[in-house]
Image (cartoon, rainbow, N blue to C red; front, side):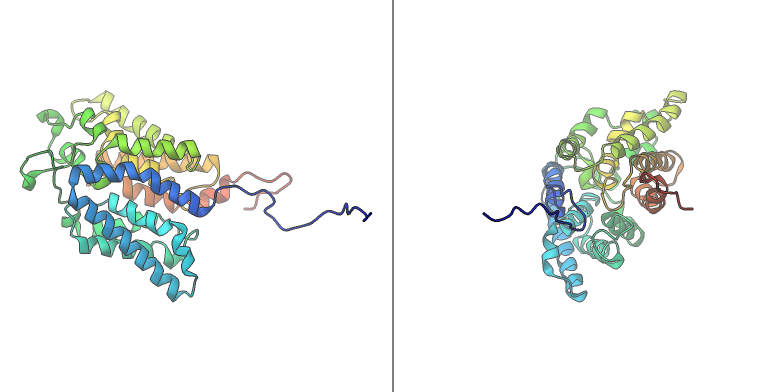
Length: 326
């Protein structure tokens, strides 16, 4: 009878392995975006489908080109990260945007926002928002030209988003403020991902149940924005909209639920996540109430992305016996 070997096998970490992998997490995010994507196609018809397809295709092609130039295996194309960037970028674009502009934005998002930093896991800023920021700067008129959903018959030359109507057309005193019911169901103008709050929340619920995103980030953003805007609303409701309006209107929900929660560009510690989220909500409130733009989600997330390395450094829990480095 052979002697039993009781020796230990020593291997390098990690010793505990999660069942989730990068592709599984990425494809769960893609699944969670489907309700909002279908809603955008329902409200904006063929234009939304073309934008989604153009951004998705351009992102995948750009990713493949950079992988080839960097002599990296093309199998990384299958991890789903480039597809998410393309879908998210499309969801932040107005349905009237020319397709060639959308393609340029996708190339910038992947090339400058992701691959220039070394690829997935190395980028500092959310790639989709980098692409949108470039388009906002390069093509400001096209990025602020809106068309109504297919069910609304209005003069498209004067059509405005709910936040634009509030900011520039004095909607509260004029009695033209978009109702909360319309914002919830989605029959309003705006970018593809701004239409239906219900569709976005359904997708986010799937991610929360899977624990694919940190709940602290959307909760912190909504809490911070609600407290900030609520102070001014209670002080002067004839001038400022309610906190619930600010939560449901614009790109707050898609930003808080799907962009600010990006694992690469958000903090890894609970305390860091709270600081990051509260900062995003505060900056959104400042821009919406006192800035020159009707919306502020994109800039606030990019702004707080820049602080994530510092938050990770100073809020990471210490290992037992570890001394804090200055």
